[in-house]
Amino acid sequence: MAHRGSIPASVQDWFFSAVSLGHDQAIRLVLEMDGRVDHPRLVRALGLLFEVEPIARSRLVEGFFRAVWEPREDLEPSAACLLASSSDPVRDVHDCMVAPIDPRREPVVQVRVFRSTRDTVCVKVCHVAMDGGGLKQFVQKLTTLYRGIGTDGVQPALLPVVVERRQSVALRSFSAWQRLRAFLTQPFHEKRWRFPFLAGTPSEITFSERTSLITVPQLREAARARGVTITDALFTAFVRAIFGETETPAHVPLPFTVAMDLRRFVSDPGILSMCNLSSLSWIELVHEPSASIETTLAAVHEKLGAALADAPGIGLAMVMEIVSPLGYRLFVAGNRLRIRMAQREGREFPSLSNIGPIDNRLFDFGNTRITRARFYGPVIYPPTFYIVSGSFENSLYYTMSYPRNLVPGNLAEAILDRTVAELDSLRLEPRP
Image (cartoon, rainbow, N blue to C red; front, side, top):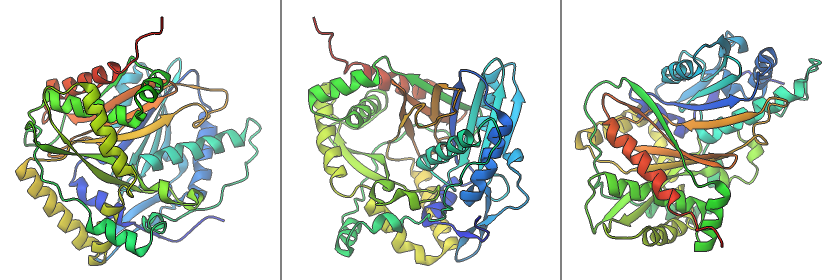
């Protein structure tokens, strides 16, 4: 039975509403197919998903003390899943990706199928409603329902309705003492890094990506030989690119942030709706200009390993839980004031968000297979700077979304180039 009532917005939803400040808060997933999907069946699958994931058919309604996701009975799945003929899929996908989503008025989940000789599927969600993990969950459920309908049109058995969105579900894995300790030890690092943004209204939105030469199996082998993880390697490449391409103080600790998915602490992920459960952990690394990549990799492995072993992201989650009794409007106003002050200061923590793997087993469209997939995060704006890493099948990639009128494009592209070059340098020499 479908859920008909409103759903409370989580404190993390509040946060992403606050940080938008009128800027883009969309997360995009672009899937290039080897053929054509059955669009009417995809629309029907989305309609079924609306029944079991009501957040996908809701709008954000803001009150003083709280915000809620209110169901939209006027939203038909056909309005959120459009088919368009395309003579230039690259251009049309870009135009689709550029358009922001207003969660108060527009569908928070939007699917566009651009049809030429083969289909390109663009899935776009509002970060106020869900994070990258929520987007992956959405597409996985959508493709499951799509396959379940079948060519005969028979309706599949629906999944249970889920509406749980609170980050407190992840906190249940920790005792009161562990949560208090995570809050008290939440680091408050000095911002020492400045990216040369320009002031103004974002425009000329650019979505850039780089695919590494080193493959997932090769990186796995290289990481294993060095006693580190793939995440260590991805983060090391980013760190060295920041050190090498931007002005960073030498011989002092420079704080970076790494996105952490709190879903790892939920004992039964099946209870979760599509939601925001991402947090951050801080990693301090000293910029040693003459250090080799092996030295940086060893330092990253030590620091990141220590962070992952000590309830990563829980400290920041506790901070938000503790201030949430202020109510929605005061919470949002306080965060927006903090952001404006940070914009004046111009300093920020460079950040990496690893979205993880995608493959045709995870997103199974039946007879039509994905040949290429890329995640793109929200468009960066002053002072925030981050890139996204991920993999499709055996290929590794980094992406960045930025406004070319505010971000020096040559520097942004140089950081992507350097990041991939550093990652490729980890490849082991072929065995004789």
